Length: 462
Image (cartoon, rainbow, N blue to C red; front, side, top):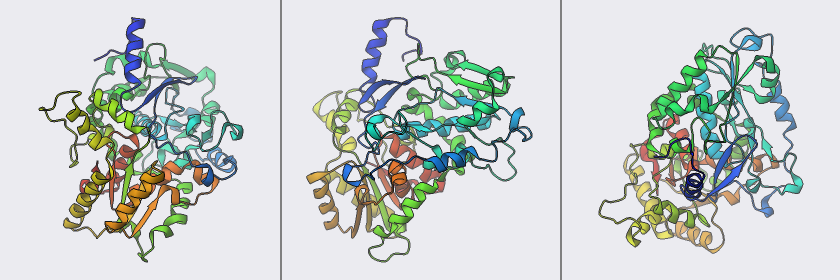
C-alpha cells in the first residue's frame, strides 16, 4: 500500500494517474484549501435547461436564519459561547459531488461530538460543472448552497437529544466571531494523520478524538497537508473506498449525528409537492408500494471498465456484510479477461434485461417476506432518450402501474438547487431500494435507510 508521503516526483505522478481512473472517472482538481479527485458519476444534480427555473436562488433568508441560530451568542455559558470549544475542518472537501462531501460532513460532525467540541458547519461549494445554472448566473464563484438547504439535524446546527449537553454546531461565519485569531490554533493534518493514515476507520476516529479532546486551545482549525497528501481529509478516499470504513459502522450508525439527521425543509417541500405523482391509484401511502432504483448510464460505462481493470471493490456502506448482493470476483476468473470484465459490467452497468431480472427478484423477495405488493416505481437516473423510453416500456409491461423519474418532478429554484437530495429522500422513503455498489450516492441512501430501521432485505445492489 502506498504511504502518505511521496519523495519521488515520478512516483507521485504515476499514482495520480492511477487515481484518475479508480472508483469511477476521476479528475484531478484543486481548491484553495485542498486537492480533490472528482468522480464523474453521471448523477451530479444538474437539471436540464428545459426544467431549470430562470434564476438560481440567493438563499438570503436561509443564510439569515443560520446566522440567527440560538447558539450564535457570545454570552452563552460553557460549552458554548465565548468560552466554548470549537473545531473547524478546513481540510473538508470542496467542489466535489454532494455525496462525497456529505460522507465527510457527517463523519467530521461525529468526530467533533465525541471530541466534546462544537462542529463548524460550512456551505456546500459546488463543482461548477455540476451546478444547474451557467456561470453567467452565479451569485458566487464557485456557487454555494447553505447546508441547511440540504439537510437538517445536529451536523447543520440542530439540537441534540434532550439532556445531552454537547455543544451545538455553529456556522463558519460565526466561527470567525467566536474564535478570533489570537485564540485560534492552526493544525496541519500532517501533525496527526500520519500515525493512523492506513488504520481501521475506528482507530482513525479515536486517534483524532484523543488529539482534539486533549488540545488545550479553545479553537482549532484543521488545515490540509496538500503538499504531501493527495487526500488530506481526516476520513479520506483511501478509507471510504475500502473495508476499513466498516469498523466505524456500529458507533456511527448509533451516533446522534446519524439518528437525528433529518430532511431539510426545502427537500421536504419538494417531496410533498410532488408526492401526488405517485398516487395514480389513490394509495394513501405510496411509499409502502414503491421501489426506487438508481441507474447510471452515459459515460459511466468507461468508469466501469476502469473499475474492472483496477479490481475495485464496492464503496463505503455498500460493503456492509448483511447485504445479499455482495461483490466478489470468482477465483476462477482471470484478471482482465473478457469474462472478468463482463462480470464487472453486469453489476456496474446493467442492461435492461438484467435490470428487470433484479427488480423482479427484489420485489418477490420483499413480498415473500411479508411486505406489501409493489407497483410504484421511481427511477433515479441520468439516462435519457431511447434507452430511458425503452426501460420505462419494459417496466410498464412488467406490472409497474405507476412509474416516475427524476425528470418528472416540478421544482422551484430552491428545490432545483438541491435536486440530488430530493431524489435521495424518495429513495430513503421507498419500501425497496436498488442501488449501485460503487456509488457514494447509493451509500448515503443506505446509511439513512438502515438508521431509519429498514431491513437489509429492502436494500439491494445491482
